[in-house]
Image 1 (cartoon, rainbow, N blue to C red):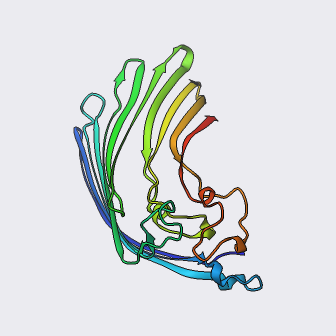
Image 2 (image 1 turned 60 degrees about the horizontal axis):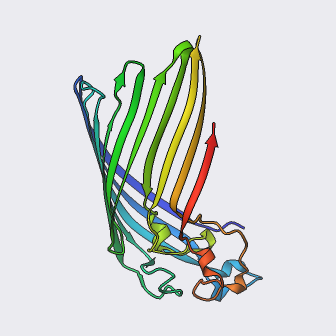
Image 3 (image 1 turned 180 degrees about the vertical axis):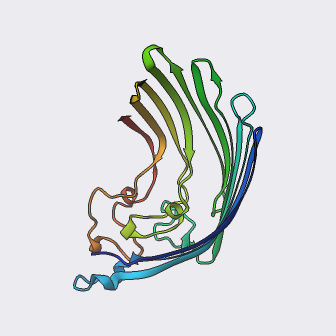
Length: 275
């Protein structure tokens, strides 16, 4: 059966653009009002003849403000680009501020407003030198979380392309990305959506490697790329490998093997892709 849910978002914004042959600059502003009404499972009210009676409304509302700015210098070597992004989130609802490791029953939570924000700066360029072309970028970000912790993340990406005889082109690249968990994974609980709060979730680090060979001649283009990703301190997916019977979950949404249900960081994950 389906579970009812409602989501409403009103977004407003504006954009300023200035452009000439040597300079391109942009400024964007967004303001959004969000209202969400999800239904969570309440095991204390479960009735096998009327499963809908165990669903309780769980409402969230908030405001999101975001600013983006960028400067590009196409007349300079490599066309360097500088981008900035800032985002502020003010959320109100049943937000849980302690991890399951500290409070299995989610005893401590905030029903008022909680605020978080982040700022990111990125520098990129695309230099060309004869038969060699490269895409280079680096970023740095600051995250202020809703449970009053601050984290600093960074990343980079380097991709090179080399033109070869007979229309062939070789490409290779590597990069590093750091991802902060989404706020609803850290602070909200809903067993229907396999969501269990854990503010102790740390960022995950992704190392990307790519190798490829392309051929282009007479209007035809063929390309083969091998991608390899190594994810360290990865976050467990929001899915359970088994179904949990309702009678095995008590009134505080804890299952017998709670460590298998809670999103946690684990050591390493590898993904290989051939396209």
